[in-house]
Image 1 (cartoon, rainbow, N blue to C red):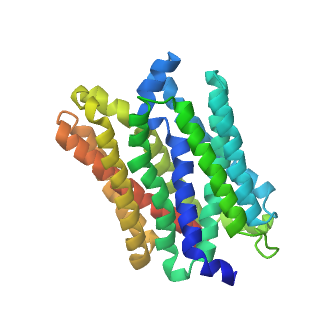
Image 2: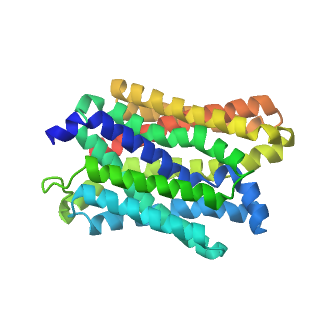
Amino acid sequence: MKQKKQNLPLIMFVFIIMNFIISLSGTLFNGILDRIAQVMEINTVQTGGLTSFYAYGAIGTPVLILILGNMNRNRILKTMLLGTMIFGILSILTNNFQILLFAHFMAGFFGTAYGVIATTTIASLSPNKNVGRNIALLISGASAALMIGIPLCRILIEYFSWQMIYLVLVILMGGGLLSYTILLPESKTNTVKIDLNKEWKLLSTPKVWSIILASFIVFVGYGAFYTYLTPYLIELFPQIEPYTSGILVFVGACALIGNSIGGYICDRIGFARALLYGTELQIFVGFLIFITQNNMVVNILYVFLWMITEWFIGLQLNTGINVVS
């Protein structure tokens, strides 16, 4: 454990890069829904199901972690990453949309479980005073995927197929798997022991339930809006289509800003107060987006602010569930 803590900066770097890759693999289609719909000759709503099914995969994560709970944590981490790679390869090889939905669902199943174990690993390695900051750094990989990855995919889709882009991501996952094998050697003391009685008692506590409920509400709303953000903006303001990649860069930058501010505020006032303030602001911003759809500049600016508050809240939820459990 002492050696791992000494390697924490390097471990953090690998985890951040892998969070970028895993997040981009799950949201790859968000910025190119209209192009995927044209290639597959289906409507945009159906194409959005690819992102939705990836998110649905998270439903099985608690059961999966429960089944594998007594396995070495590092081994679970690598197993989840390997599963994500396998179903990523299936996504690339199939030409059937239904099989693609299934493959993306299973990639979400393993990818979400990977994210849970990655977060708990970083939380366990971090000093108590830096938990919020380090989790924010970890999550910054996902926000970077929005800021850099998705806009880049919007550009690359003009020259390469989405399968080729996805293949590069799978290869990079393989590099991460190798890095974990080197940096996180197996240890008998590094296990996630499951006691069903204790787990149930913990799950039934008001604090845990309130965070789970808040997570469900926040991320359902976020997923529904962000998945169709590109078609939403193009439908309302067709003149911005040539600038879509640039707008997506700003959207991703807002995610990074919200996540960074969230980590800073969390370490100073606690996740509970930060979550309350962030949620109140989010409700207000959502209302403003709804009533300003006749003004392109103002509406897009509120979309940017919405993304900042969404990721601010997300950091509090991720930190909160680790703190209370």
